[in-house]
Length: 139
Ligand code: 5GP
Ligand code: ZN
Image 1 (cartoon, rainbow, N blue to C red):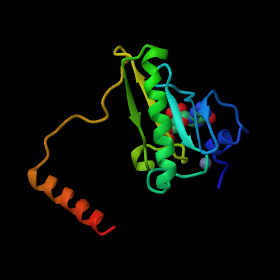
Image 2: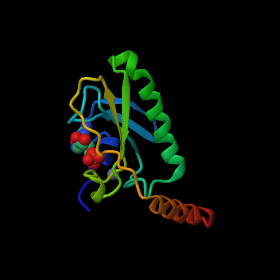
Image 3: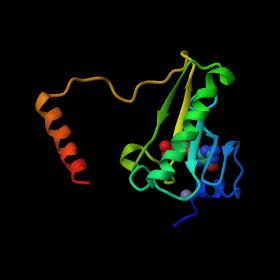
Image 4: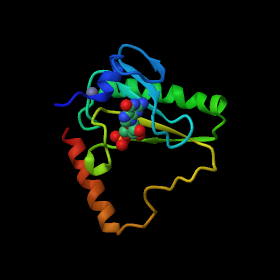
């Protein structure tokens, strides 16, 4: 496997504009920010995405995401944030080390929703919800 760029950042082998870190997680500025203050939060141990990250580590990532998001309005002047995670190439994931994007929203940026609301067929909602519910009760 090629060197993982976010593992290298986590080990301080590649520079990044670090916002916060501890032994388990790190937050740093995205080099191609969708808006001013766009931050990535990663676990330090390599996980690829939601499909393989260990639950306790995921919770640690989420706790840091929450702490950062909550200071963004005061520090950056934003009035909202979006969280974004891509799991898998099909879902646009480009860097294959787990990361959650925190994108501050100011109200004037030219961002679009990635999907438009289209009502589903009732049968499809029931079928997918019950298939997932059944699988979860077996786990
Ligand atoms: P993905 O498309 O995988 O969800 O997002 C990967 C993100 O990582 C992109 O927003 C990209 O700008 C960011 N990124 C890629 N390489 C680097 C890097 O070397 N340093 C930093 N700080 N961000 C990076
Ligand atoms: Zn990695």
